[in-house]
Each structure stands twice: as C-alpha cells, then as structure tokens.
Image 1 (spheres, helix red, strand yellow):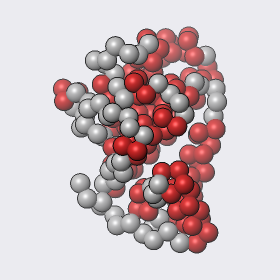
Image 2 (cartoon, one colour; image 1 turned 90 degrees about the horizontal axis):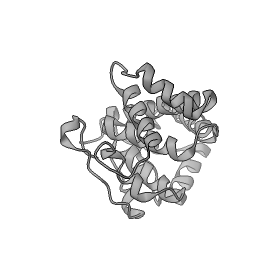
Image 3 (cartoon, one colour; image 1 turned 45 degrees about the vertical axis):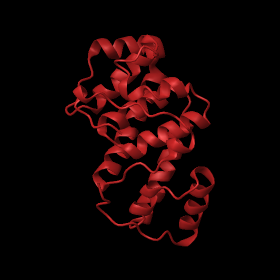
Length: 195
C-alpha cells in the first residue's frame, strides 16, 4: 500500500526535535509524524496526548502493551504492531509473548488475565464494540476500577492511532527487525490482515 498523503518536511523547532528524537530512538524519523506534519498542531497534540497516555500507571504496563498490540493486529496497523514489538524489547517485556499477540487465541503462552485483556481490546475495537458485562466484570474484579478505566482509555487511544495510520496508508518501518522479534502472523480465519 502506498501512502495516501505524501510526507511533509519536518520544519521548525518541533520538527527538528521530532527528527532528532526519532533518529535517536528508532534510527529514523517515524513516518506517521512526517505524513501528519501537514498539520503540525495536530502532531503536537498527538505527541502530548500520547506522552500523557504513556505516563499513566494504574494498569500494568505489560497488559497495556499486549492490549495495544492486539488492537494493532486486529485493525491491521503494521506500523503500530511493529512499534509495539520494538517497545516490548526496550521495556524488557517477554518477547516470546509479545511475538504471539497477533495469534493470542491459538497460543498457549498467555495467562488467563492476559487473554481477557486482549479479548477486551479486540471487543472494544470491533464495530460496533462487543464488550460483554461478563468480561468487564472479570477484568474489574482482577484489575480494580482505576486500572480498568485506564486500560479502557489506553485501548481507545490505541484505536485512534492505529486507525489513523491505516487510513493514511502508513505501514511498518521495520522497527521489529532491528530488535529481532519474530513477528507472528495473525491467523487468516480471524478476518484481520497479517502485519
């Protein structure tokens, strides 16, 4: 798939910071920033909000990471899934588990709580959402109200990011290759595209 909106040259102080940070963190500038730079204020807002989302700490970081990758796999955002693997490595998460998120239903490496979190992420991502009272109650019982609300908002932000990237035609930049996480293809029967 080709980009549906061409990249823009990152300019000004913020553009220079994005280039510097992107190259420092990933070895290259993140393509979503270049594509969305046609609206610099929007990019700054995404970055501020994303930074705040990353700072939330009521829910377990591993669970939020798996939820984000489950959303990315379901929506078909190769860029977001790729970034999720990259972050999993840098955050020292279980890479064997991270690599299996796209096929979590068939994999035997996840705990019941992790499975419920990924099921919740997918149920929130469905159109219309298919979250059940039973699943919500199980998660609320194990996570508590603050973590449950945070997980829900984190999944919603993941949907904003993944759907934006897919709609703009942004694909993987190969970040997972740099961290040597083997990508697991999502089973074809699920209806979602493989990363």
